Image (cartoon, rainbow, N blue to C red):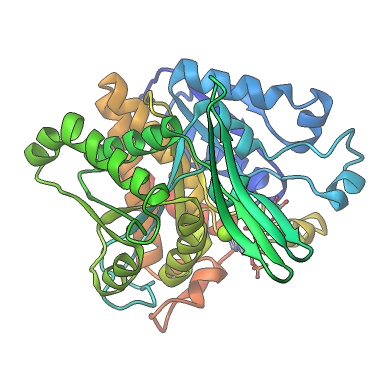
Length: 401
Ligand code: NAP
Ligand code: MG
């Protein structure tokens, strides 16, 4: 069988257990079938430190060039990691650096199989969370108010014109917080959500609290509505999908009652909270895929989980671990599928589909990693090591179609 060829994608290697899985996946599930054409960037912590983190910026710029990238989980250093890796500096999160350069929105989608069911029984299709990644409480200015006094909101325009309003006349100590967001960022978020909905042919929901927040959340609602009307409505109707706005509390109730199968766009804080709720309810972080989509149509695929440090320390001692490679495999298949779609490379896209099917069928056959056995409804579910699990997927891939 001749191998499938492809145009380049950006490959970003990472850290710890996921770096081990990364190599296994390439050696066993990709290289035997595809002549992998990747522009390789090592985002492992030692290389980031050696290059003063320039490698991360270079990788992000390469995604802008090739439009498709796949990333392994990486360590975001804290004080303990600075010590452990003898770092020059506490480097920023690579994901944050890449997100800032691509100005992207992250979409997270759980994978569902027959035997690993969500806690919420009605969710028969996945729910994708799209989280706005700029501003609000994450860039707020806060003050612990020490005692009596007046808090005012003051805005000085370019021309010197002032807007001034009393926030509260404090008669006692309290707290104060000022948030902001930008039309440009909200617009980019809206475009990413509408495009992704069209791409995946799923309904789009967006929710905020505009009844209470008559300027702030109203702005989000209005920008989404304007962009939808002017630029997406016709295409949505043609694709047979809908855009739907509601209040955040109503959305939460509807999501629980729903059957899934839509994209839920969330403001920054809502997205933070709701993505943990949704991923937990769907079962396992190891079954959560993640893609960063930029407004100009660049895609970066990754797993939603981290570097699985606790497993890595066991692996270093020579133990075989049962770490789940599914989300990382789907990051690869997602990138290959997107490369195939963008280039009209049908064999590549078809291979990616086949790889995904082989993964899910392997789980369906009762062979899975330990994290899934705990969630599985099958009596005969068997926990195997990562290497055994990947070998079982390979056996399925090698079966003639
Ligand atoms: P984590 O790597 O996601 O792992 C937390 C725990 O979840 C693991 O100890 C394991 O539980 C379970 N788990 C996660 N993924 C799994 C998988 N594929 N298979 C089986 N079990 C899995 O999170 P963390 O330990 O908080 O963070 C470790 C490092 O990852 C940190 O340095 C952090 O900075 C980094 N991180 C990176 C990213 C990213 O690059 N996108 C995201 C998050 C965190 P058990 O030990 O109970 O089996
Ligand atoms: Mg969170």
